[in-house]
Every structure is written in structure tokens, then in C-alpha cells.
Length: 597
Image: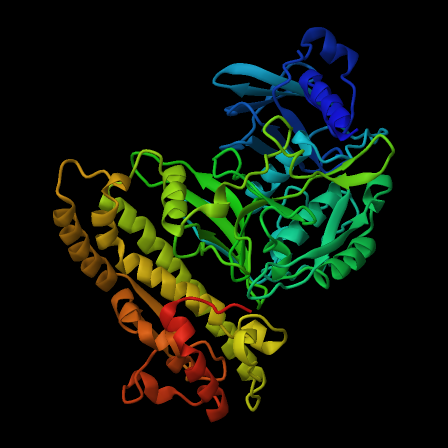
């Protein structure tokens, strides 16, 4: 029955040209003079759902098969309206623009690819007709979801992006294409403060709410040292497919969601089918915005953008994550942020949300692994990552990001910039902890025991940094190890006939130069600024094995020596009982490997 459904969906998609979400017919005058032709190559998306005259209208065209080069708006008299648009690569490819001060009436939207018209549709302003509902997850809605994610986290190259929570991002009309999409002023007071595990679920459910799509999630265990988490039957949410959900109803649903899902929800065994996520191939067309990476220790990244490799700069893959203090950051994907390992306790790797479809009996089902093949309209299920050694995994991902290979110094610059971003993110995290202690100067944050230091609730989760510091230690190790990697894996680099050992020497010298030039600043306990070179940060690497406790002063957390001028402003120390526990756990950080739970 599901195969029959997918066949019907495929035939529908083959015949569709542009499904205009506002469902408006072309005016007779416009249709007679400049009729739209059924090209079947792109999808027009309009926000808000019912555009009004004189108010901004956001339009986005999404394609799964063509790079989009130009978007043209023509009024009913045949006049072209100047439009400034933004293009993004793919798959899926997208182009979007904001149209200002449009009068009531009909407008023609044309989309070109390399100078050729590939799609057109009509936009009606000032009317609120009955609209066809798109309440199925299919190739169209998955592509729209990816394009929305990419636009949400877009920033000029190579700008970093950071917000105190998801709320200001969703309330930003420049980023959030779905802002006030329902016309209910629904984003004004929406509570959106997801942590690491919640982020992909909140993004997916928010999109489902706005677009009237079904949503499902599982309650899962946390697994053990010998087995990944297992999940129970899914909870279905189909209310949004029948009626427009209010902000109150979505808030109630999202609270239930975040109280159920956790880091174990994404660490299920790769071949398990009672899951929210399934593993995908390591291919560019499969790793779309919205795909997640679940590391074996619980952290989750959401892919948000690919930046193609050019002659001037290295390729990049950007991802977003949330921290326990609710900050949202966009960061580069590289070996220092993407922790891949084969463990008995987790199914790690890149995963996509398992599609939820309806059957002929009007029931909702999540597709099985066998149904998610290359012949379906969804990203296929794949166990490619199941047996990959970490070095092979990183090598293949490196090739995807930079298919033409990199000059060794270019590779170093990419790693170095990513490490600096991680260090600067840590500055913000520690500043957040200091703000807590300024409000609560006599407080002492309780410290959990054992592996609970990596995942717990309350102030320790919000302000400690054990997971982040372990990733930082790994990132330092990866950068310091690049000269040796050039010797071990010369095929990953453009050597131009130069001996690997000679290139290694060049990179070591370049490393010394760059790390002394680049500096960061942090705020000391007395409010003064302390400047550190990256070379100084790297030299303090061993100090970061015990620098994650928020009860310690900021100077200690940045590795200042007790007899130094920098340390003189330190006024707060973790209790001895907590220091003793940290000494017991230090081996985990020295070995840069989290213990099994």
C-alpha cells in the first residue's frame, strides 16, 4: 500500500509545474498576454500565507534539479518590477526576495536557470481565497524545509552567527522566511529556548506547525555502555494538518516534545527502525540542510549550508547547534567539531528525519528502512557509515567539502579559523556563567558525579563546559597534528611535486606564525580585558582538562597560572570536594574520549 502511495506521489510530482501555496488563479489579462508555461522544475513559496497590499511579501523559489540564477516579477500590465534576490546553492537550490509596496492584483513570477525560463507562477495580492493544503511530507516539502533551514542560518561569508537563543532568530524577518506566516503575530512571544538535543526537533516541528504538516516523535531510553538507546512507539501530532494551530497549541505541543526527546533520541542504532532518525549516504545530495550529525557522546549538529570550493577559498560545510545555556551558534564542520567514532553505545553519524506519510486508509506511518531506497522521493537509507573507521570517515567528508583538494596552507587556514571560532564561542559560554554569579555571588553550583557531568539539568548544564572543552581539546589536537597528516595522507592535498616532509616543515613554520598573530580577549573577574594569543591558548591545553567547572574563576578557566599577574584578579574557587572529583575524571580529557554511560 505504501508503494502504491509513493508511486502516486511520484506521478503527481512528474506532472506538477509550480504548486503556488496561495492557490491563486492568473488574471485573464495577464494570462492572455504572457501565459505561464508548465516547466515542472521549481516550486514557488510565498510568505505570509495571505499577502496584503502595501505590506512586504517574501517569495522563495526552490528547485531539486536546477541551479537558479534570476527571479523576475511582472505586474498585470507587463511591467518588470526591480527585485533584489539572494541565491543559494544546492541541492536543493533556492532564490528568494522581499517584495515591497505591491498594490492589490496579480503578478507573474518567473525563475531562470542560466538564462532559461524554467518556471513561472502567479502571485495574488490582497485576496484570501481558499487554499489547497499541502499536508504531506514529500519531495516538495522536504526541499522547502531544507531551503528554509538554509535561509534561517544564512550569513555573509565567512561571518560567524550566534544568538542567545532561538527566539531572536525566529523573530528576525531577514532570517526567518516563516515569520508571521499564519498572520497571527504568532512569533512575537513564542518561547523558543532549545538545547542541543531539542534544536532539530524544534526546527522540524515549527516548520510542520506553520505549513500544516504532521509530526511524530519517539520516547527513547539513553542506552548503556554496551547498547544504543531503544525507543517506544511514536507519538503522532496531526492536528496541524486539519486546522491552523495557534501559538498556544504549538507551545503546549513543543513543551511535551522537549520534555520527551533527549540526546539518546538521535543515538539509536543505525539499522533500528523504531526511530526518529535514519542514517544517510555520505553524498553531497544526501547531506542537505536540516540533516543532523549525532556524535557518539550525545552532541547534535544541524547542517545548514554548503559553501562550494573556489580558487580563492576552501569549501565549507556549516552547521548550527544549541548549547545547554540555550545559545545558538553557526559553526564550521570539521574534524574538531564533528566527533565520529564506532562505539557499542551509540549509532553515530549523519541522519535525516524519518518521513511520516499517510496511507490509503488515512493512517500515518513512518517509512521503514527498506522503503527509503534510491528509488523513493526521499533521501535513501544507508549503512555506509556503520563500519567506517574515523580516518576514512573524515577523509571522505573532506573530499565532499573540497573535491578538488586543498593547498596545505589553505587546509591549515580552514582548520585554524574553525578552531578560533570554537575558542570565541567558549568566551561567550564562560561570560554567561560569570553573569550568573554576578546575580548570585554567594551561590555554588552543585557538581554531578561520573558521566553525569556531561549531561544533567539545571545550572551545571547551563554553565559548565565539559563537552565543549573536550571538543576544544580534540580541535587543538587536530590542528597541531596537521603537519603529520600531510605526511600520512598526501593524497588529500595539492603537493605540486613537493616532498611531504618539506611541506610538513612549511606548515609547522606557518602554524607558529599564525598562532602568534591571532588573538582573543576574555573578561577577567574585575571587569578588565585579558588578551591571549592562540599560541598561548594552545600552550595551556593541559589546563583545559580541568577548566570546565563554573564555580572556578574565569582566570582559572582560561588556564592562568596561580603566580601570574593575570591570575591575581581570581576571586572564586570550586570546592575541594569538586576538585577531587575533577582529578578522578581528568583521564577522560587527557585521552579525549568520553566514557560509556
